[in-house]
View (tube, rainbow over the protein chains, first blue to last red):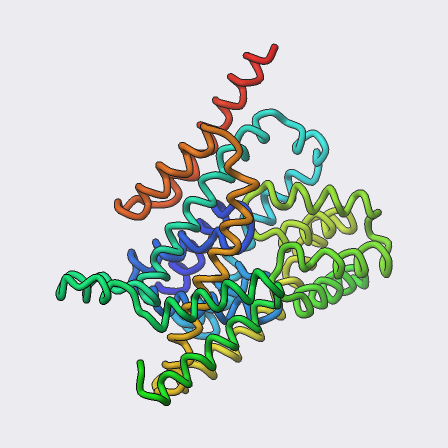
Length: 191
Length: 181
């Protein structure tokens, strides 16, 4: 029963994701590997869409994964599964809000959790790098270091980074620009 | 009932009009929750927002649950959190259906091969910001390095890491507190 599975999988993600939308990424990657519902490449596209549309990124991702896996019903159930833990946990915490944030156990847990959350997002980044800029299979085949990274990818990546650091534009600007770059290179027959 | 609908609509506006979640949402929350409806004071909202980042789940939904609970108990929490996710569901389904029907076109594939590079850069930029806040001493750096290494090379569920991090964090934090006294 795919709907129930989606609901339960996202219940788990909602329960263990700490620190906002992007932190759900490693869980979704794990889900892609375990269930085969979607690929890492699809996941990267979902991140792009989720960052460029209104709404919380975590919910956007859950909806997208649910829709890709099982249509409209899947989209709704994945998002609902994602918010159920929040309803229970935040609902409970709201009774003793002040005490909660000053509790030393809570502080300690978050001291550890923040570091691990960053580490997990980093490893998700490596997966997206592998489908966009780094090509390990090709490198393993040819042994040529130039085949390890995609040159247009590196150029685009550095360009995006400079634009981001200089003007701090909305993510949609970076993603739109990258899309145009990809289309132009395709048109010129480079990729 | 009127209050429930009001909560739903206010949070639907918040969800539907803010890009990027997290920090981008705060001005919109202030307008809808504090100024327009008087559901919470500015200070309360800041508390909700701060604690919302420290418990599992999406920050926007957690904040919605806090405000909803305060106004109308559990039903209020349900109304507010359904409100905050409804625009996402509608917008993403529309876009996903659209993209699915065009994903075979070479131009769309080329666009996405560019977009994936942009996604890497955006994630990297978030990671750099989060790293500065999260990795503050030897223990957190060690935790970061070990978990990053293991999760890239070994197939372990992230849930395991999250549990270890919480337990390890509590132990080290308590030991440090003990040493300080």
